[in-house]
Amino acid sequence: MEVLSKSHKSRLAIRAFKVTADALVLRGHYKPSGISGQTLATALKDLSPEIYGTMDDPRIIEIKGLEYVLDRLPRGIEDCTRIVLTASEAFEHTSFEKILPNKRRRISYRISGNEMCFVITTGLSEIYDVLTHITFLNIEAEKIYHQMKEPGGDYSSGWKDLEEIVASEECLADQQLDQAIWNLSIILGRTYQETRDTYYYLDANRKSSGCNNSLFQIIYRLGKRVEREKASKDNELLIYFTPSLQSMIGHHAYGPSWAAAIREKICALGLQNRPLHIISANMHSVLNLLYGYAAVFSQDQNKLDGDLYLFLHKLRDDREAVRKHAESSGCHSVPDTSGTLINAQIMDMALLGEAPFHPDLHIERENLKTRPPVLLVMDYAFGTQAYEAMDELLSEFHHAPAIHVASISVMGKAGILPGKKGDIMLPTAHVMEGTPHNYLVHNDMKPEDFDGSIDVYVGPIVTVLGTSLQNKDVLEKFQTTSWKAIGLEMEGGHYQRAISAAIIRGHISPNIKLRYAYYASDNPLISGQTLASGSMGDEGVKPTYMITKIIIEKILNGDDGYS
Image (cartoon, rainbow, N blue to C red; front, side, top):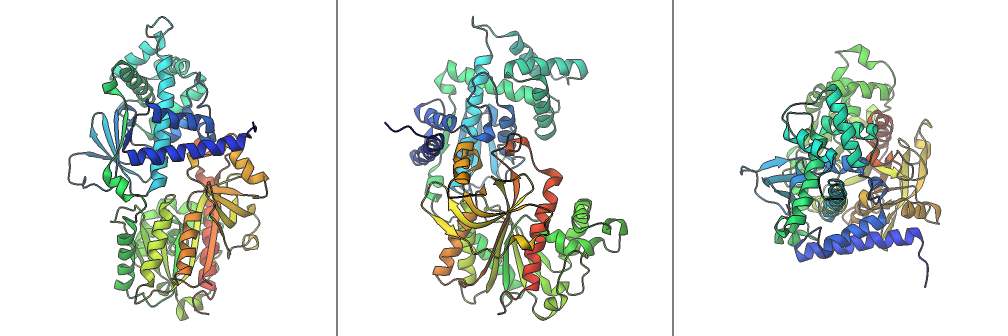
């Protein structure tokens, strides 16, 4: 019998999770404690994603992974026994509490004390993301449950202390708090310092009451939920997928109205006959780069000192001033009303001919007067949603009267394999994980475009099913074999699939300029540099704006759309 390598076993685990998840969505429901739920849990344990650390060690609660998951799930999820995933629902005019996670554009509603509803608008990637997090949370809850009692069946003294803290409405301070964290660290199997760090992180980012006991409450509720589940099948956690969600999968439910609204806005502004440049990025980089200097030019000369990246870092305190100046200088917001959660900005470069720019931003002003382009900046899509968004947008612009798309630029963050946080990656191809679909990229961005102050890597990038469905063995395989992959992300391959389809269908020119660049938000192969280790913070300022600067200079100084 053939002995499977670690990477092969991991790829099989990813496939098992995906196939099982797809089948459960079609079936309409499952219980994490049931056979199907345990199949998901086994696949996740076999995969042992780097982002979930010590998930597969029964003695230790994975608290960094817990931080990561809780930031991406709605507050109170640990107490729920019924979780519903549905398509768009008219919840806006109900009394249900709307809850937005800290670090994910995701809409959910608290239906009752034990029921939560996720409104899925971004497709399969979001479903995999939610199910992965729920599976992880349930695995950790089971581990907490087994730490609650002594071998004889009585609650441990540490658990009794935890129960008193949760029941109390008093805030802990000084020695009481240190003692409580120490007791909790014994339950979690973590060091005092690890537990303390997570306590303060969650206390700052996820307060669940007016008191400072968020971590205590979360651990207590997770353990008690499993205890109630063991006592009665009526209390078992149930995940339910509505028929409306099942019908939406594979169909473009939100993209058409989103793209139509953008086209309508462009036409209403009278910009439909000008070359259009699409940029997938965040909602602040292009805005700050083009309008930030002029917004504060006459107000605070101290802010103008230093290089471009130092200036943009200091600009954080002037967001409102930049926004107001941009709105008066040709920048028009297009907030999403379709449910895609992808906002957009339309920027008329004709109105920037006399505006002051930072000296480090090199713009041919004559171009702004004689051949001013229009920029469409669209916020990040999520995973497979990128295909729907780009496909519908390019189809909509092809309708008569056609809007000429001159270039498409994608600036995002990705996990890097050969480098470190803050480095830059330029893809030569997008490799779709788990499929035979791979797309070559004729990338208009080159290492020589950059100033040499940041390491730049060039090569294929893997478009993965989800950041939570990766581990070191699979990623090392992509890096060290003839694939020579330099990173992983979730949207690029889906964008390129839509772009390739648009070229085949004649919606855009085969000579369209394509620009892809990613900055490294993490390195999943290096301990302490995974996504679960925290956000980049100030480290991300320079690579983000360096990529944005090059994209803008290429658009405004080149001949895209005029040759």
